[in-house]
Length: 286
Image (cartoon, rainbow, N blue to C red; front, top):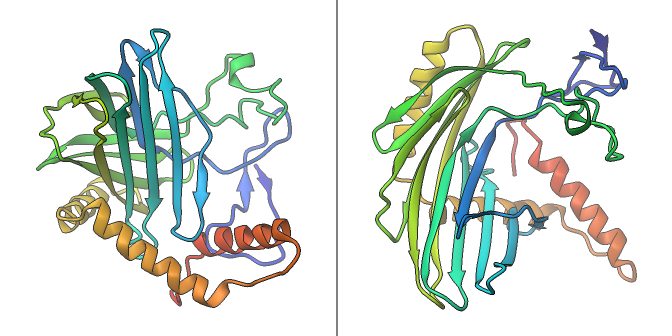
């Protein structure tokens, strides 16, 4: 182990880490709560960069996906972690066929099979990492998973620090979803199909509930997670987003500044404020 020193310690700071061969250290990558895979004409979804709406606290990804045959599908992803109800994370997936009608197959779930790329030699140059070395490092041990009411849940523990993380999700859509369960060693999710018509957007909302505790008591964390899942059973993307946006409005009413003549510096300062405040865990909030 190696010690990591800070001038001042706040909640969440890493103070010890396992060194790797490249002398890089970092935080364990959290699980994939926004895990979604979808196919259309046997082609998988592409990976594209996202934009951040700091005013609303929303991460947005949008693109038009075109097949080799010329069919075009407009896709939008919206997601946020609720700053007011901090156990919640929400995602909306919208698809709109631009020149065809048909079906889109989805897989939505929760995935603890995340890769610790820095530990495998990733060095920000594109020359290191598990793709080159073949090494895959994962620090999560799945403890339990299952179906509860109309939700799906999974719980895992970090292998060294012993932090239990419970997560569950529900799906909401204007279409009735005929789901089939998918379970793997560190994954739980569902497959389903959306029928789509040309020029008509359809959406699926995913509402995730998270809870965590450093304890060896797996059952206590699972029971608490089930309680929270039922507590937020009626929560929708829209009402969670409304309270989340209201929270950020209060933040920006206090923190926002104006600098004439240098929009890049102003944007950098706002981004710094945003990242600082969204990781603030003290009890005194705006």
